[in-house]
Amino acid sequence: QVQLVESGGGLVQAGGSLRLSCLASGSIFSIDAMGWYRQAPGKERELVATISSVCSTNYADSVKGRFTISRDNAKKTVYLQMNSLKPEDTAVYYCNADIRHIYSSPYLNYWGQGTQVTVSS
Image 1: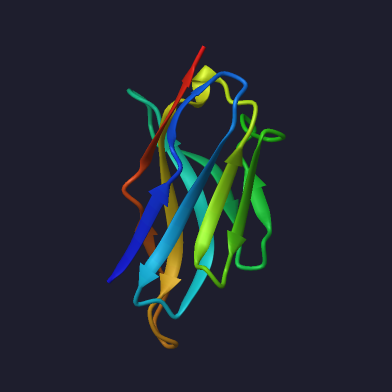
Image 2: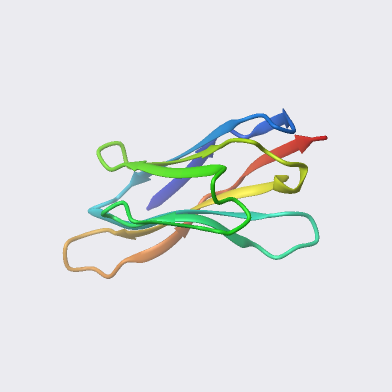
């Protein structure tokens, strides 16, 4: 079994910062891409940022220049540093990762349970 557990969400004023963390645990041989997605009330889940196993990154246009994704492979953790937060960033943020359990197995995709980020104006 694999678990992705997010932390670091909360309530912040516009212009403030938060740092999200997501720890992967369980039966893990290797982790490929990791990423953050978010879902606001009444909207579909959308990509925020992804990072490959060699730390190539990709961002949604709406967060470029404000958010930074990073990872610590030894700790099996992915981070999302969020600066200059706006009320429209309010959403549940979900961690996502492609994980291989053993050497010969395919990568499987996993989601965390989500962490709420609320930005007040």
